[in-house]
Image (cartoon, rainbow, N blue to C red; front, side, top):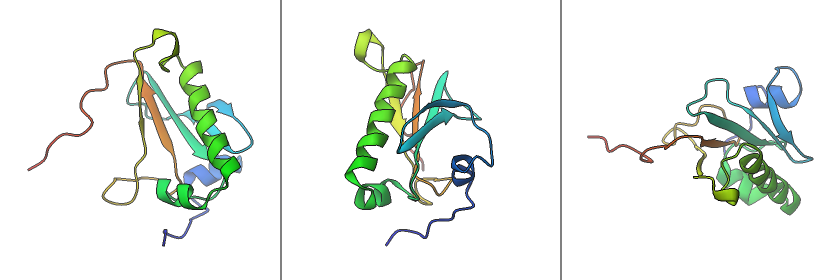
Length: 127
């Protein structure tokens, strides 16, 4: 069972217009905006407009229209930010974190689209 959704999280507040964001793109089911602490030249967050905590919650409970709308907005962001593979761009990284072991900071499903430079290894080994 997924964690209960907390509608006071920062992304829920952004969706309600209580906190501003720098919007990159939007459709009926998702919103894309610039990360306030970017880790790459391109660092955009894409969030569904529905109340989903994590990727597994979204994949299991979102409607087909929500899943398609979210995924298509991700592709639109990749194209508009010049990191999608179309046109010979060198690529990007798409990351989502879930729960404490995934180091999820905001309990609203979100995908980081990062690019504009070599991103390095996915994870570093730890002792």
